[in-house]
Image 1 (tube, helix red, strand yellow):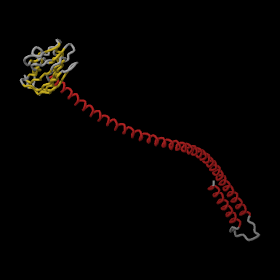
Image 2 (cartoon, one colour):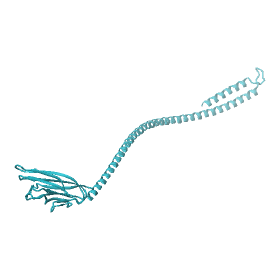
Image 3 (cartoon, one colour):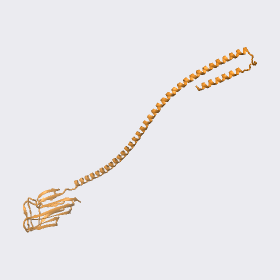
Image 4 (cartoon, one colour):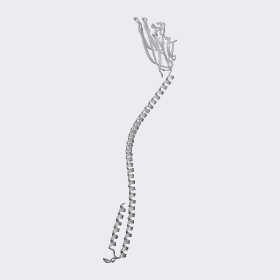
Length: 292
């Protein structure tokens, strides 16, 4: 539009310049003279020039109109573009807001994941610690089970020896004129059959350490006494004197190391007596502590 206006202005200037030149032209006529032929030619030239100028002006007008229409279309397009751009900017603002919100959510999720991973790491460490403790416990359990199995095997292989027997139900025993081996005939326990109630003698089936316990009991007004023998050797003597009403009693125990085949028994010396009845007042007991 601006270019068309500029061109129109230039053409007007040219037209005015041409008209000035024709008015003061060089016809050579003196003032007051009149050239009919020249006037006719000049009029024809000016008419032709005006026609050409108007034609050019029309073209310029048409060009200006066309340019104005194009400019209007461009302005419309520009307005539509501005609208779309504004809408895009609004959408971008919304997207940026959403992006910012999403980034915050992502950061929050990252923090939660970090906290979760920390807890998971701590839990895994605790699980590893529990596994180590369980492994140690299982190891101890396995060791204990092996020890128990070993003890069971040892116990299974170890000879089992234990006995306990009462003297008699007859009441008074003795006194005798000679020392007498007491035969404890009431057998309560005789594991391993190492005690013989017929002879009153215990025979060690294996080499080892044994425990023995025995006692004496008397109701008569007399001395009571018994002796513990290992093979032919007297090991211990217990005795007491009954000098009043009621009864007297004495007891003792001994741990002996015996060889296989050694014997242990109870002897009542001469002139002494004991008393036993259904209440089992006198007991001779023994058992193997451990073999050697």
